[in-house]
Image 1: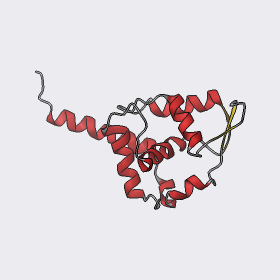
Image 2 (image 1 turned 90 degrees about the vertical axis):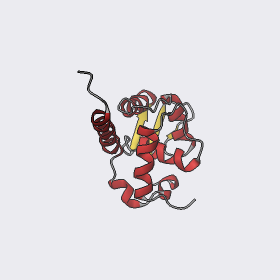
Image 3 (image 1 turned 120 degrees about the vertical axis):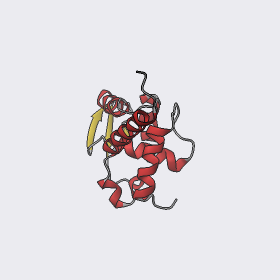
Image 4 (image 1 turned 60 degrees about the vertical axis):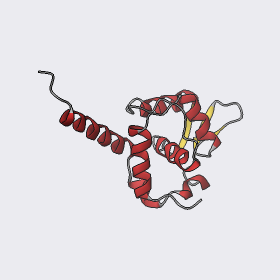
Length: 137
């Protein structure tokens, strides 16, 4: 897979989290990896309990309009794709951003804050709706 660049990343984050309602993770691997990478940005390197991982994922999802994928599915996908490592007993999760999965993203993507990108896109959608929605008065 070729590296994912910043422009594609930003467009996909907006489309996948704001403009396209989703109840499942994307089936295209590139799109799925972008979604998971954006979600993984809420984690700092270190170790987390399952409860902490769930809370961070839910916190991210709370700000997204149409992205309704279950946090458990996301947690499993983060592990399956290598963004998180889980202990055998499933009690602890570790984030190591030197893992190979992060190498498919160009370095300048680290300057992108997915939460801000999503928040700005949501505000843009709301502004457009107000502009083009007839006033009820």
